[in-house]
Length: 113
Image (tube, rainbow, N blue to C red; front, top):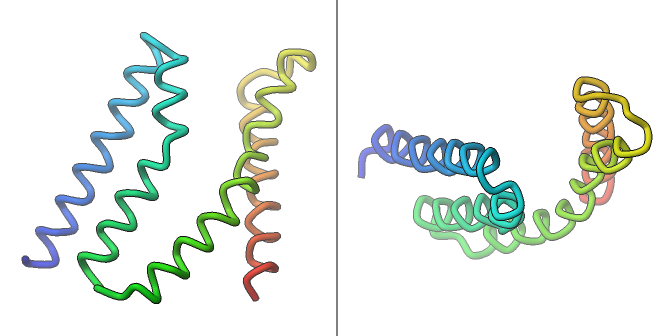
């Protein structure tokens, strides 16, 4: 398959997943949260990676990195959970979550040096 067409297919499928989840969040936020918590992006990324490169060694490294990153990435949600008591608003919660996510990325990078 032409690499440009393959990229467009990956782009469309990923975009549909994000759009579908954000649409569902307005109607059924609990269901949308559960769906987003599923490793759908990881599943698709691993599938696309294997189809494109056919390397189990790279796929194993990818899976180990994901496994380590998932608990670290949960730090992003901390300000939103605390917002129930702190009443910081969306912008402050998002900024704090992104800063925590950046710190988690630095820790992840340190682990895998």
